Image (cartoon, rainbow, N blue to C red; front, side, top):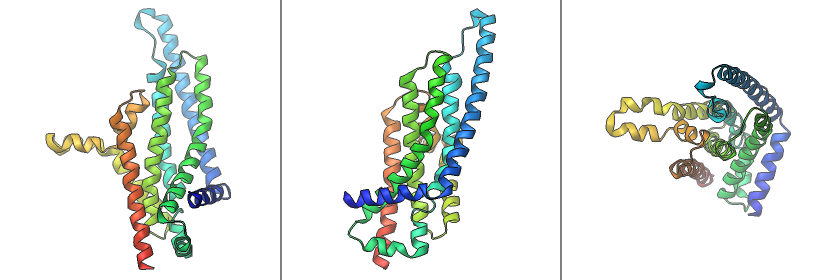
Amino acid sequence: MRGLQAIYLRELRAYFHSPIAYVLWVGFLLLTGYFFYSGTMYYALASLQTMQNPMGGGPNLHDYLVAPLLGNMSVLMMLMAPLLTMRLLSEEKRSGTLELLLSYPLGDLAVVLGKFLAALSMLALILAPTLLHMLILTWLGPVHWPGLLLGYLGLLLLGGGFVALGLLASACTENQIVAAVTAFAGLLLLWVLRWSGGLAGPTWGPLVEFLSLSLHFENLAKGLFDTADLAYFLLFMGFFLVASLRVLEAKRWKA
């Protein structure tokens, strides 16, 4: 446990000593602020049109504004996660410090979990200021807080999956750019996989759709809780963390 904490704090400090974390932070907040402003204006316009036609019913705040905003944030996270994870193990391999790190009495599991939790914490810190947007929404109408909290839980679970896959990509190469591109390609493939479900036929189609990241996140973003979605993200993270662990173990045996 002490070794895991040491790795975690080391990696978290490294983010704050690198400009990339601040660039991603500012860029993410600017883009989410733009999406929030645009969505709020559309919601206000739709509400105004409803007031002129009371029989039509008003737009639902969560479905009309919150869920699309969470969806936009998830896409931005898919772009950011490979940049946050690309150096975690590839830089250690390139600089030759991975062998030194593995020689310490830390354990491969502590190295993998420490780096994973540091990247996920950085992603959560980048995400945290967007809660202010949700507080502003209370001025526009009744906020469905259970659904909103489920949406943010979905973002954290999705971010954990993004980081786990990015960590594996970083463990497989010494080049940070290759790690980032590989991770993004893998995440994008798993994101759009559900669109190919209809092409896989009635037997494999449901399985292909089930493997898609976007399907399980959209349920949580809409405020719908299903244990299958929770199990999917936990198994997704576990699979790629175990794969990263195996890559490190293979590196230790080669050394």
